[in-house]
Amino acid sequence: MPFKQGLTQSEKAYNQLTDTSSLFAKIVKEDFLFTWQWWFGIALFVIPWIAWFFLRKKESTGRLLLGGLMTIILSLTIDLAALSTGLWSYPMVIVPVAPFLFLPYHFSLAPVGVMFALQIKPNMNSLFKGVIFSAAAAFLGMNFFRIIGFYNPKHWSSWYDFCIFLLLYYVAYFLVKLESFKKMHT
Image: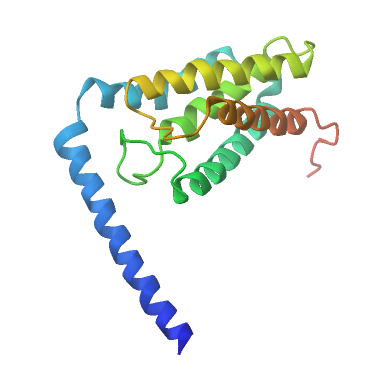
């Protein structure tokens, strides 16, 4: 019987999650929609990709996009683990589809930031560049989002954010630097 009880409990938890998601949708509709913060969040979705499209190194587009995709996957995975354990939260909800996540960070800011960092001064020492990128993202970017109410680190240290950004940068760096890319023959 424990399995059936587990299924019942799981269904109950999903119903609570659905109710919570509905509450977030109501909050977005009644409190956040069309505020300057909401428009700023929408801009954070769009503007980084427009900038990247025009400023990217066109000959490296595929490699950079692979690094960006891995950044999206890793940042979402880390964020879901941290959110589910209550390490931090995102009080400002832009899109109620995934109310617990700050989607502009995962689908725009983090991947585009990493891709720009990878393509700028490609011959620079990767450790030095990774440290600069991670410090800017953790100590400037995340603290800015904390100040404007988009991010609540609770008791999470900016040094931990620094380590996460360094991990994101280096995983993308190693993917982009792979020499095993070869053209596919048709």
